[in-house]
Image (cartoon, rainbow, N blue to C red; front, side, top):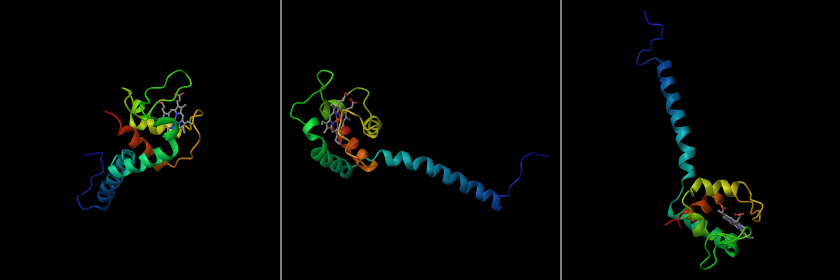
Amino acid sequence: MSIWPRFSGTSAAHKFARLTCVVFAVAAVLPAAAHAQTDADTIRKGHELAISLCAECHLNPGQGEKQGALGIPGFSAVANRPLQTYDGVVSWLASIPPMMPNHNLSQDEMHALAAYIMSLRK
Ligand code: HEC
């Protein structure tokens, strides 16, 4: 005799168990998908935000990696660092770095900015 409960294919308990699995699987995948929004609309939104909020510091012509301790890196230099990631840029913005003005960015805005910055990666 087995110690495991036996469910017939049509028992309510079995159906419930299967449904629970599906719900967990979807819940696990959704946040990851929401993070990686790098479609053209999101990038465009990030670009607009960058022009209005960040350009004076980060989008100057020919601006490369930051020079000296108080320097400011251009966004393409930030995007092209070998270990740079989308999540890395979001984390930087979420940390409200003291060397930058606090723009009170929403989660959506942080993700749009990260999508735009990472679109500059070659
Ligand atoms: C007043 C100037 C200023 C503005 C405006 C500004 N930043 Fe910055 N930002 C800095 C400085 C300074 C650093 C370099 C900090 C350091 O490395 O110590 C920096 C660094 C960064 C970095 C790189 C972090 C790293 O890994 O080195 C990112 C990404 C960034 N800023 C994003 C943004 C975004 C997005 C905006 C607009 C919402 C913005 N910044 C607005 C001054 C500014």
